[in-house]
Length: 322
Image (tube, rainbow, N blue to C red; front, side):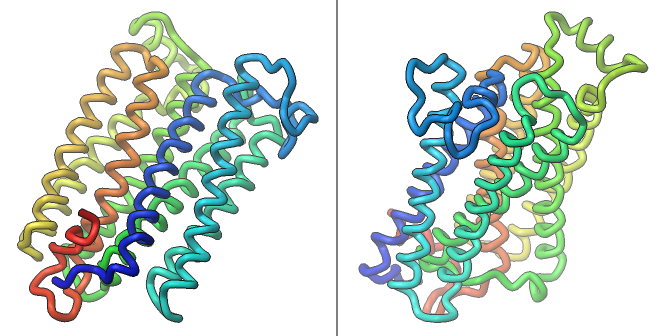
């Protein structure tokens, strides 16, 4: 296919950069939760312990304040992404639409984060309602990442997907996307349980999980791995159907990358259990989840999108990013 116009290449690179930076902010947010630093700024928002910049902060305050600062930068970057889309692309452009969704979702992301702080669903709070908020937070985060991925895809020359006209492959990819989304929510709540109810040995963890009085967050330690295996089978089938439906370099590369990422994710998840969910492993597990999610969105686009005019396949859409 034709390379994207030179005027768009800078915006495309910026879009991919914003996506990468957002992943950094997401992982830092997980670090806040895993270290119990969510109450580092008290129940104040947007101020931190009643101050714009905390003086003589404790470590938990530094961690939480740092996350708020990086989140604020992410918000400004997305605003710039939206403004750039309106300046560089015509009305009705898919870049504009995806950028608009990114702007909306970054705002809802901030509001959910504020709600967690103001309602004090942080630190050692184990109310069931916190699980709903954490799950909603992950759900919104995944949608934000998907929107940013679409901005980068469209800005790089990719065309809008047509799910309704993609047959079995499109259906399977849609089901895989839904499955990974549910799995991500389950993983977020499970990780919360690991933080709130830590164990020192595998035997202790097993006894805690199968106890009649086990907290619902703890019981998810059983269901999350089971769900991961089921969704893994769905993802593998979707990747296979995608390659059959759209044989081409980019689809094959994305399909193999997806299957490989999922296999690594399963291994990291198992290791996370064996090592009793140390903070670094939790962060790696989350990062892999986001990368897998981005890969799946791109595979869905590459498989279901019609080739742009003058292109034999959508495979070369990545050429404009090199």
